[in-house]
Amino acid sequence: MHSQSFKSPFIPNTSEDRASMLAEVGAQSIDELFEDIPSEYRHPELGLPEPLSEMEVIKKMNSLAIKNLHAGNYLNFLGAGAYQHFCPSVVPFLVTRGEFLTSYTPYQPEVSQGTLQGTYEFQSITAELFGMEVSNAGMYDGATSLAEAALMACRVTKRNQITVLDTVNPRYIDTIRAYAMPQALEVNLVSAENLDLNADTSCLISQYPNFYGCIEEMQTLSDLAHSRGALFVMSCDPIALAMFKTPGDFGADIATGEGQALGVPLSFGGPYVGIFTCRKDYLRQMPGRISGKTTDSNGKTGYVLTLQPREQHIRRENATSNICTSTALIALWATVYSSLMGKHGLRRVADLCYQKSHYAASEIAKLPGYSLVNDRTFFQEFVVSCPKDFETTNYGLEKAGILGGYDVSDKYHNGMLICVTEVATKTDIDHLVETLGAISQNG
Image 1 (spheres, rainbow, N blue to C red):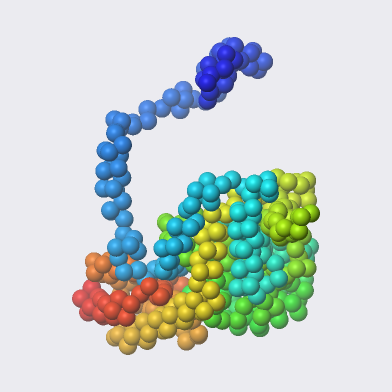
Image 2 (tube, rainbow, N blue to C red):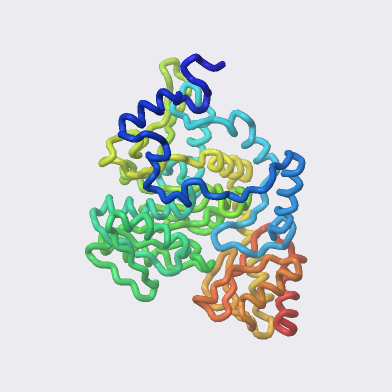
């Protein structure tokens, strides 16, 4: 129903309203208000096609979608930060129920108990998986979680230098730089063999496994950071933590991760969810939000937003972060997946990823011209130096219906980062190996 005051329910300003506002700023018309914008940019020709019906739009979009090469119709050996794992069909069934799919942020606990409990369970699961004391409600993704960890380390230590190992995901390093620059924080990229921490170093940041799939000497790195008064920060693959020692075991102060690996489908870059955990001592410097569990006056369990140290809720100068939109639905997805898989299921997934990737690596290493670039312990991913350049090798794989690995030839000669998860069968891996062998011979 339209009121008499508003001509349109969506554009409430009447002609009189607009005239009043123009008079206030001393303009005679809208064109005069925007006259500083060159006329050719004010009303550019958009060149839009003719309108289509819904049926025509669906047909058009489907014709464009089938041009994509994706893990649904190709064998996939591409990882590098986003991983194809099997997700039981009950997970999307539960997560996309209307009460979860359409719920807004839980400002009113009395009507948001389901959302708050989901967040609480996410925190509990990720804290246990990472072996850490505290976990928050989630960040945008793994990259922003790690960048927030770097800022938090600077707040805790009151130091202004951030040291990052050069084996951390390059996109994560870019994100850390983007977060650090406005605050005049210095980001130093170093190798594990040439570490130089000084009195201004706030933290040492590592990845576990690193971007190239390898497990580095985490305890040595942790001890070194602490001996210099810096915090030790780890970015971790949550699936790997079901098999290997946790960040808590290494004495990490802050541990983050990308939650996509917990059953969240690949989707061309997101939406994903960042995991953020830390020691209890640093709770009040943690970014984001925390859902807490309590008991009401009737003795019944209730859930509330316990901590919200973001600028939207407290004085801006005291805020720990400006994160606003939480990917709560994706966090719920990871929660339902993890709870259904359980400790034994997650361990089984991790074991399959480990065993299958090592089988693939051993078979590829037998091919003439192919070699593994290092002999460290690795999980799920490994770098292969190919006899031909990356483009030639990857194009050959694509013609055989295979999504190849990630191009790391900037670091390793003809380097390809190959990922093998539990979804790859022995037949799939053998097909990859045979195709790589044929490419080296025929191109």
